[in-house]
Image (cartoon, rainbow, N blue to C red; front, side, top):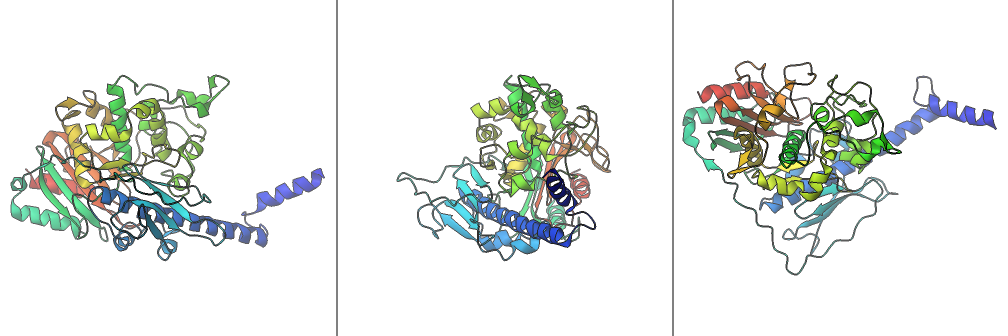
Length: 469
């Protein structure tokens, strides 16, 4: 019997290795293909849900055709050709098919013998993706007293005269015509100088009321939320993250030494399986933050090695869990003046603040302005004094390449033509927020750049700053 068990284990171990039995390889290929279809269906369901529902919350509209054209094209090569032709259905609260009621959920089938992938909308909280295989929920009726949520004015002052009209036209055109990256697809460009909007342009179908997924700009938002928790004296960046997953019998394992600061600086020392730490099981598969982000082992002493990882940001946010339980992210963002930003969660309510945030270009400009104003918003201190200096200080190990890293923010101190105090939030598909304290300027660029294209944010920032001299 023992020999049979060892033989079975050996056969399983050889599957997928060069020379492994063809039947094992083909079975694995079929399994991988099925999993990719499940992920693609989850990706599509979540984007159709979030793009539609979060825009409608602000009085804007996104058609499925627009979402297919922008958010659902030019994505990961493994998923891109699958997503295009997948059928879908957007179900609404009071009468399915009505555009007047809020989205209830979105369904995208992926296999005949499995339930469809489902993204569920919670009004005012955005959408989450259910686990693969979860049953489809019933459409919820609208309450009799339902009324659309009132959204405060964004408070921006528009002063286009700060840029000569001819220069503004040239900059706006260059942001959209591929000057800063062949094949790049800009959806919004916004420049704030001295607290007023100096330039604002949108692609057709987008406006100041159109939110987009921030992707990794969410990491900089996460660092800002952590600043609010530090101001409250609830937490310190030197606090160990200390989640229960890393504790047994009243004692922490080696990961108990990881602090919030280590995680913000991508210096936890933990292993991750891919460069950039792809977290598809959380983003599209319906796995939870606890299941997929907490379990990775430690390989280096905390604070000694830089490795960009979604998991680190997710753990940093877990480190202020008690604060966010009492002050939900939405309330804190409102204190920042970011009323048009939604921090979405996994299906168990964990914030996915490595990527899954939806915000307008103006709200991202408000994020930058908050740091220019040293953590003051609406006459109230909402971040600690000098929090800007904390997040833009390269005190930890640094990445190779043209940009440094602070605490949840990238550093542009080595970018030619850009002041050395400049720092920025960067996100997938071309999301950028550049903060230039010495010039009192914020530059926002939103995009849906296809895989393989890149927007030259350093070049764009350099030219904007030169135009505003």
